[in-house]
Amino acid sequence: MSNPILFHCPQTRGGTTRWMNEELGAPCAIEIVDIRSGAQKDPGFLARNPMGKVPALLDGDVIVTESAAICAHLADRYPDAGLAPPVGSAERGAYYRWMFFAPSVLEPMMLDRLTGVERENPGSAGHGRPEDVISAALAAVDGRDFIVGGAFTAADLVLASALRFAMMFGAIEKEEPFVSYVARMGDRPAAKRAAEKDAAAAAELGWT
Image 1 (cartoon, rainbow, N blue to C red):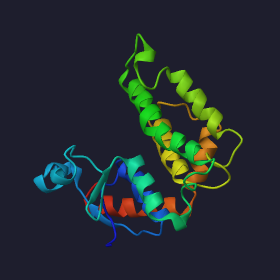
Image 2 (cartoon, rainbow, N blue to C red):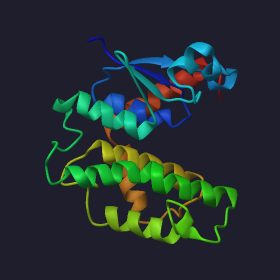
Image 3 (spheres, rainbow, N blue to C red):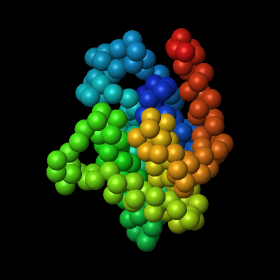
């Protein structure tokens, strides 16, 4: 089977999947989609992802979209990298929990805060009350090096990416243990390589 193709654009959520690719030794070919020129709305790209969004992964005949789903798929696609607990292990459930906490709970809460949404009934939203979201995340990373077990997994990558954006834009206060956790994950060689490659891609696109 040929290597997957990762459709990506710098300065987007695709940065999470590019980091994942680097953690795996960069098996995916990268195809840059210039969203500022509207390339994500081209018919060819829409045939792969009707949402017209990046990132998207083409793996053989399979299309995977959504950053966390792409990371989960790649972790299982390349099990020798050890970025996911074994299926059936006690840690697999916690891995799924925190892998999808970021996009389904943390990010919606972040968007509510950034857009000034005040929900009269927080229980009607999947993420509930902002203070509960933050308390859960604080408890999850406090006093431990990694979110699941004693080793880095794709769940750390996804959660750290979301927390970094949330703190960058002021949706979550820059406080401990978030700051240390995000900094520790960002110091990984693969994270630095991904950031360098994204900076080079942005420069090639003429972005400042």
